[in-house]
Length: 332
Image (cartoon, rainbow, N blue to C red; front, side, top):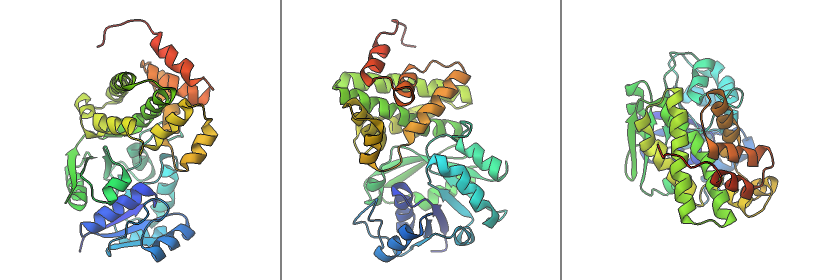
């Protein structure tokens, strides 16, 4: 019980990782920005809003105080939505020591400029601040109830990857390490865009053939962008690439897929958001991914059509017809 970790973000994923770490014998402090929500977690010893009926282990405590979180541990795992990531770090920095290490489980780009989130860590803290990324095919509830799961931990510093693996690996939860931070982060962000596209196709009523084709061609889009940004192509054949893409595109536990389904069924974006009532990272990621594809002149037709549905009011059926009407070409 001498190991400690602070986890920032008391949504479903942050809570699940906090339960996992505490279950593995690590003293864990879970932070959330809403005092009322944190008070409810402390009283109920569970997150009734996001993960009901899953009791917190004894080693898990909660707080809404960033100073307390930073003092508790120099190892900080940030699980807030990508749009709040930079601001959370800025608020946190005054309370941290020079020994701080930042891991992130947020999936998306910095909405200010489309930069990768581990670059934001370097910008807010320093280039020397150890950073790591946790990603892979995971639904929070399955992790919290201890169903078999495997993830990737990426860091340019192998000792940091192994430290995180030592905290999270155990029981039904397997961790794999990887040095390719760019690839792991790009895979985790862009798969949410493709999950919206897959949901749209299924909502319209297209079948398994279309879904499989979309996932496969979508993977090509992720690889093109990732390699251009400096990732290794083989990373996208792993858990943080293909694994996460398959999970998010095919299972209705995915908020991004459910959002796409609603659009395909003819519901408006506002109604779909209201029904889901949780962060849908793929909406912001679609804009940032599309802008990056334009910046680097990368062909990403599925991303482009998804962007137009979300930001230019293109009818979902028209978007699919645009994809089908493209010229015949060689697969690779």
